[in-house]
Length: 202
Image (cartoon, rainbow, N blue to C red; front, side):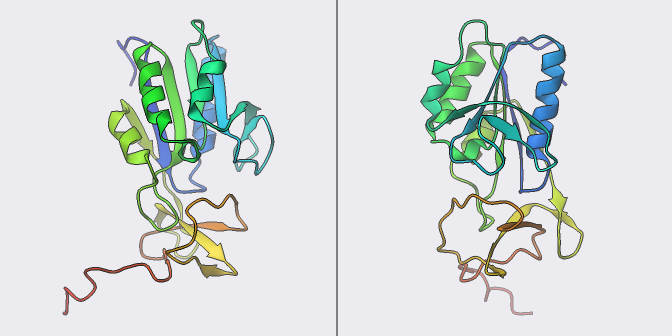
């Protein structure tokens, strides 16, 4: 996959919650640690579900990380010796992160990020489409739909055991108690506009 490449590119690991995105990011980080690469791992401060100053997967794999509130803070923790920058839950940072990871790749740093490609409404999550467009490598993972067992590509937000409303806030930090993995057919959002619902009548 990476043969005959000069250092410096962007890898995006995306998909719904419970698809193993963080696990895959940590797997790549561990391999680079064995290769004695100089790695800095970041995560957004807002993501405090499991631990502070650690990236933790749902399976409890973990590694030390730097908490940042703004993408520009990345520059405070890297230098000319940095080989790899890894960012978990990148969708929770500000949009400047797209330009920053592009800049880092141009400076011959390998950038590995993970994040949700869709929000709870099943729509593109913020700046993620731009990030996917500039990445050299994209890994799109699926989970298992809790309703039917099909491959799940969407994240179902639960509010009092019912699907969330379309107007609810996009960012709501949580895990199993707040979200489920669902396929397209089983994913529900109350009051979501259906602009073409009357176009097919048979």
